[in-house]
Image (cartoon, rainbow, N blue to C red; front, side, top):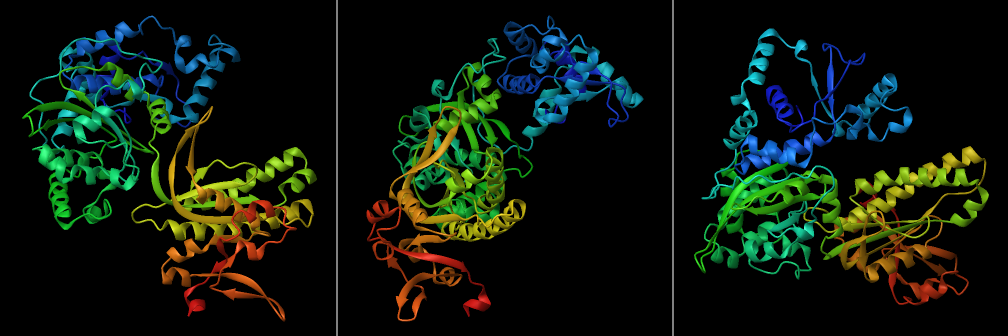
Length: 577
């Protein structure tokens, strides 16, 4: 009930009407005090409650909603052992083995609390609450508890124009298992906004009906910032009530917006635009912070005096916020079904992200002598080493906002993307330096364990550039990748590096500020009469460094004219002075 926001009476009524299945009632565990019984529901109840909320907002009665669910499946005929939550355990003794079934149920509950929900028996509550819940359960007029919740929430939602026509009341069949539609099937406006407020995916109806311009050809991702688009002068001329659209997005995205960061919502924001954003931001309610919204909006076009009314359904997740506009004169249960299948929706959106031209840093690090190390270790020990390597450096990449990319062999590739307020250049440099330090600890640990003299090094190359960045769908997952010379050059620099060296390009160093350059010690070794000496703040062409004996000579000679430098270490203020 905490997850869904519904009352006990509403829960009982949903079960009575056939919208939700009856729970599996079990005795509480030793750590569950104060209750005599606990009811366990399958994961589908959370999806069904979301569908009910949406359908009620569209004007359907509870009787119509119950009919939709009953047409889709019959919960009254299901036996406990046939329910989804127990299917995968039938080969462990079957549901007829009560003790085994109870153990399995408890394991499922402990494994992932997102997959189930539970409620306490009425006997664990006070007498007044028992009487109230019993009255609610018997009174058919009280099947409107969710309506009361929605009504309470509406008081905190900013004022936006409501559609003039109510949603139709035609019953529809509800899909309950497999996802029946994909994002390609959406015929109404829809788009995905990332956490930097940039559009990552959009369909043609959204381009034509919401923004009145082509969005997909905008390869520069910053030009696809939602607030930049909504405050565009052309759109403001075309849509008379454009402020309502801005207010709607400020409301839905307010978890990541504050009054203090309005001026940094996108690069180049004008003072007049900041004033508009501040005025509208003050109008919204600070208490209306939800992951799922169902808000009305009307788009009034000045050119032909037309009006289009929608219910805007949104869902927020780690990758961003998905918007879909459903016309008020239709009920699209396919979209409701899609929104209730969260994981599949996210996968679909990630697979179809638009490639974007972005400024980025590429960091490639390869394990030195990986073939030799593999030969020296048992297979199980080698895989243990590689897994421990990833566990050691993974948090460092995460700390500096690196994005994982696929890389051949035992190395690793990460992208550092330019974002407002993020120093992606120094993030890549600092990440490489910190990785070298944690590798020293890992190397010492394995020396003690194996009693060998082998040093573990990650040889690192970093390059900067502007490249197309997007996703590629593999057989099992979605992989981020960039196209262009920036990646190839970083790979070559990694080949050049030895014993944990970090090499980067003159171009990257030149893009740092003077203060940032003072924070790192970089340069190259040059021959002198007394031997090699390290010259700080200097560069050398690759062709002047490599020899024909270098195993990577052929590849490196292809970029022999590229000026590069070695990053040695961080320099703190006292050292810099």
